[in-house]
Amino acid sequence: MSGVLRSFRVANHRSIRDEQEFLLLPVYGDGWAVPVTAVYGANAAGKSNLFDAMDFMASAVRDSFGRWTPDGGVPRRPFELDPEAAAKPSGFVAEFVAEDVRYTYGFVVASRIVREEWLYSYPEKRKRVIFEREDGAIKVGSTVGDLRGKMDVLKALVRPNALFLSVAAQSNVGPVAPAHRFLVENLAFRARSSRQQDLDRVTRVLGDPAARDRLVSLVRCADMGIVGIEVSPRSRAEVMLRDLLVREGGPALPVSEEIRFAHAGGARTLSFDNQSAGTQSWVRLLPAVLDALDEGRTLLVDELDTSLHPLLTAQLIRLFQKPETNPRHAQLVFTTHEASLLRSAQDDEVLRRDQVWFVEKGSDGASRLSSLAEFRPRKGESAERRYLSGSYDGVPMLFEREFEDSLLSRYAS
Image (tube, rainbow, N blue to C red; front, side, top):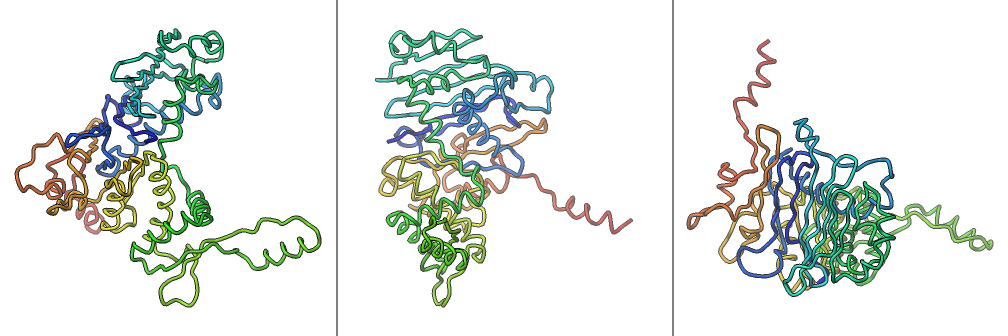
């Protein structure tokens, strides 16, 4: 097991003003963490800001020492609707398992400096202080010999706006390595990918015979009419020019390539742009899914169901839910509006109640989190129906008459 995310806390980040806790711990059953977590909420409720907060934490661990400028402060994004809140520090805390040991890592930052930072591990269920930092003072635990021996050098390197974890990892300090690797490598943020980045990943997967077979098989299983996928030169003229240069003793210049699809009953292959929006979304997503399942990563996807049929989304979720297809304990964390995933047919539950969270934005503009597990269901109650009726948080308040009046007022003038 590479690692799993167990919880995340954040305060004063974008629309999240007050501290919110996002738990991925199983309420029903056991295990380190749930393999799938869905986050529901109305448009602009703050779902993406929860993911953005986790992304900020990971990028700060990766970049604060090497990329943040010494006099540039901390590039945080506090809650700006309230000037008093905007002036307060922002906090980020993650609890996770890395290399079979539980860790808690967190930091508090102001606009210019790191106020607090800490890293604890729990080998054999006992708390072990790796380091603590407060107001510029850094202390290390008594049992972390490798870190204690390098403290003078590390203190000289760490800047007021850089995280100590970032500095220590760059200096090859062993005790911090598992936590650093988890936050930088194990958290995979799908939302950051551009179209071209996604297609480049698809091309790389298609270049690996074993991975290619799995990707093509998953596309076929999605019943999109596709029977094959190949990577072909984009221009025959480019190929001819390359071959001519090679014959004349010149270098073998790279040739631009494109992904093409063979459809059942079709005499010709079609380009990626000629596929449906659903096919494009599915193909772009699959490399990240296969990588997460292979490496045991925590994959975070904003708007998972975009252009995907609900039944296809449900099948994707089941790949992570089942130990047979997820032996390395990968996690899928995603935002969605798809209420049908809350439906529970007999013996065919897509999401458990402890795998569903809601984000709601109040009249003050602040986002708040709640879990479906907090609500006590009645026997036979439909979570899908109750969600759509507004019994839970995370649905927009829509008034039909106001929609009509917005247009009718123009025609009446």
